[in-house]
Image 1: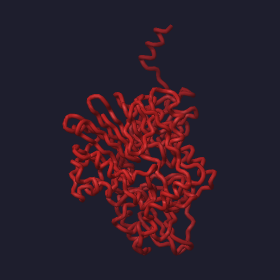
Image 2 (image 1 turned 120 degrees about the vertical axis):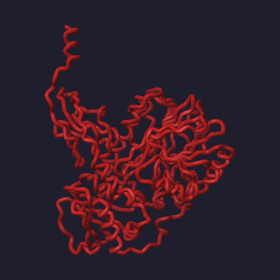
Image 3 (image 1 turned 90 degrees about the vertical axis):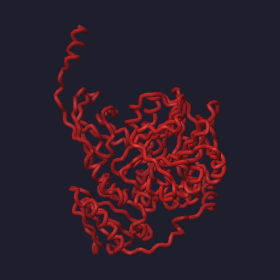
Image 4 (image 1 turned 60 degrees about the vertical axis):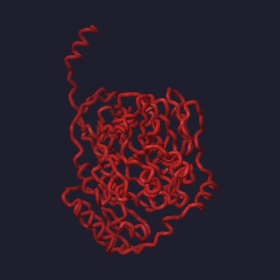
Length: 509
């Protein structure tokens, strides 16, 4: 199995004349309205990649619809070299339909369905399809080697349960969300939140590395750089970290990290140094050489069009009963006449004539261009949210799952996103809190994204920690999450002695 890296999350896996290309992204326009660009740059390598593909049977695998993984412009350039495109089967068929629209054959893979490529390699996808999370980890196997690319997918609970040896393990280690960078926090609080998020991500990766002991670790799916965003976007500590934080993870253990540059082929004898964060002059040079997609957009904004777009979304979710959701305020200027209030509980939206005081309020502030794009039925809101062109605040500062779904899903999947979140299984399990020895019964699956908490870590303070997003649920306080309005409904139960424990006690006396 020959593995080469082509930037961000793009890997080429070759075996004889067979090849699989993962998530190619080579557009100079970047992603998410030009906000994201790969580091190091890889735009100049597209012709080298095409030459590498020549004469091979090539299948492209697209992990999910985010533009730094699904770049339609690059796919169009590669289309005549591709045999077919493989995608996970998500409930929203946007990904497969968009690829078919440019004339490519698409094969959808169900969760962990193993697909054989000419009997020489197999590919399967471990899928997450809950709420706004449409993502997957991909396994590629030959008769001798296994390559696991987890990309952005936080399916750490399922990966930890994998039985079998992993030779190559690639995973995102840098951040990819607008919290806290786009939020109205002072620099100290923003940095503190970022450090905690980075720590939780690295702890999750370390658990996988220690449990599965892959031969090689290949950091990927970031970091991106943001040459066209304001300088203050990355002030202080940020979730968008670079490879210089990784060596401490591998100070001990059998796994060897390989810090591949775009265009490099993995050589099991190579010893590479981390890719350093870019200096400001490098970012400035990159900026000069790239088009500013956001600046070049020409759109017209109409508050009534935005109101129509918002109400259309509310109509999609009218059947769901919601309680205690904050009011969402969309505002594009000073004064209440420049804002729309959105009530998810009552499924109504209205132009505000006067600012009202709400018990719970979530505010998204942006310029008129942002809201003009929100009004366009062809624009996907998840792409717009990842442009990081908005500023957000919330009072109280508590995450609300349904506000997040409303802002980050698309009209094609918003109904299903609410449905899957509201219908996460409430199966209950019992676990012992190690420090106190007390036993608690609680929901087995995290209410945020459905992660399995059966084997989740319980820290020294009695919090059970979700293995996907590191949410902490205090067992002795009803299983509530302090930072989010979520709970696993924990209740202390009387400890009973099992037959096995009685036998063990007798045998040890």
